[in-house]
Length: 137
Image (tube, rainbow, N blue to C red; front, side):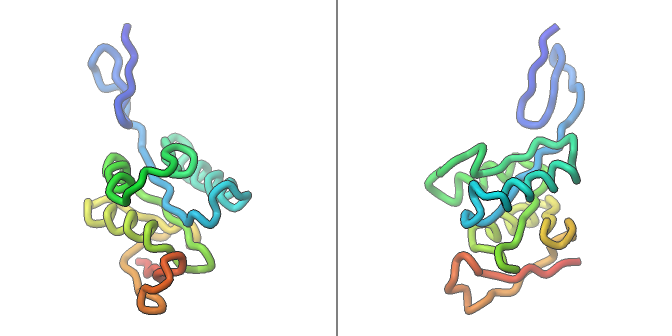
């Protein structure tokens, strides 16, 4: 019996066994390698216990371009984002909007996993760390 996992689908002898939800964790680089990142990761794990969580800090490292991260987002079933000082950075917002435009849900961890509906630029988008405020359904 051959067991294989491709992306988020498990196969046994070329038969689909189950689809594992794959979630992209979009968050500020300001919290990379901190207790806050660990705590947020644990909250996502608690909310989605059977999912594979893709954390760019842990799993991807520096990819060099936003397009590279968006390709990974494209392989996921949903995005969970978090706010930094009640705002979201430009990179995380780009990942959230890409997911939404691809028909995938985006949840805000900072607001108890509410669905993200849209956003509002802050300071005319000049601060990439505090780039926008999320609007929820």
